[in-house]
Amino acid sequence: MFIVTTRLPRRRFLAALLLLGVLLALSVAVFSHVAAVSSGKEPLLAATNDARVAYLQSLGWAVVPDPIEMISLRLPDELAEPYASYNQLQRKQGFDLSAYCGENVERYTYTVTNYPEWAGGCQADLYLHTGRIIGGDIVCTGEGGFLAPLAFPSPDASAD
Image (cartoon, rainbow, N blue to C red):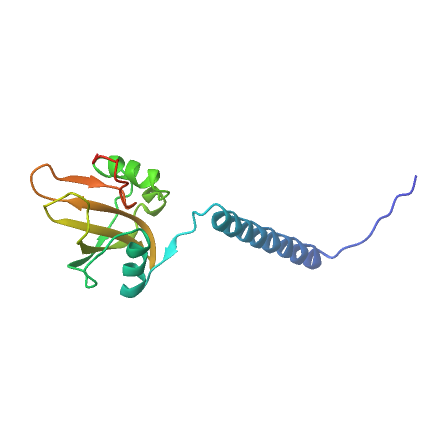
């Protein structure tokens, strides 16, 4: 059996420990990013109006290109009602607002012109944080109005 010993000055030991910590943190960050991208849960970049309209169009919606409203709001520190119920809709779509509790977000509202078999007005809401889509919904107003996910409804789907 061989025993090897070495003398390592405290300064070098601390520097090596710090470097190891930085490398570990970097590898965790890279792994998290790769996992988010591969799982499809990477927030969608939509910092411009054209990008937001293109996103809605990619889902099958025809919208008036200019938003009818843009507001900034702060999400609560905890998602109590009605936010908790609303977040259930977001989770079904692959979003999760709980990651943004206490953060400032923007909501862009667009007029939808092609909701199937609905005579009332419909709007698409997109929630963004730092230019990335973190949630959204379709709101159809009037008698019998409802809130629906962003996915374009199939012909046999009924309103929730």
